[in-house]
Length: 259
Image (cartoon, rainbow, N blue to C red; front, top):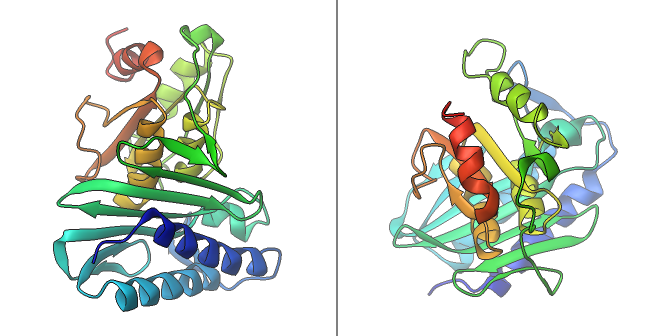
């Protein structure tokens, strides 16, 4: 049995309620590295999602942030981020979400991102458009970078890697109305889908960060690729560029040093 968008919506809302109830309390924080955090709420949300998926869709493979790979059929694969924006969450900043995607035969067909603090449910089904709380989403109509507001993120190894994204940040900051960093890749992509941001890029991501949001942005009209312009965004090393067609090629050229 294959899941429906309604299944993912229910899972995201229930998991989001776990996050909402835990928000604002003191948390037990573990460190995967010096700036990569995990809280007990991440694990509680993930435990709920994995248990429900395995109960309702036995035999499906799951790729989830904290536990990693749950083996199963490659033809039925889930990408789960039980709390995207953990650093924000741990610091009491209300910018975080649940991200869930389902892929059939390697193609992401369903994606849901739920922001429990704003009660915003972003959804998409392949070929059916993207929506937020029942309202159709469309990317912005901005055509020039000097009229754009962009968003990005930085890798967890930014202290040590030469690919820290700071050079790209500087390039775009000088030619746009601004570059924001929210701390949640899934919400960044949904905000591009909603036209709140005009474009998004990031260098070092994981499949669970971008599977759902990538589909939502694409279904809202964005071009969504890796930073070399390839459509496969889930194969590591993952990078992402999402922008309206009017800005996509301009951003890609800058990111690849051609401007």
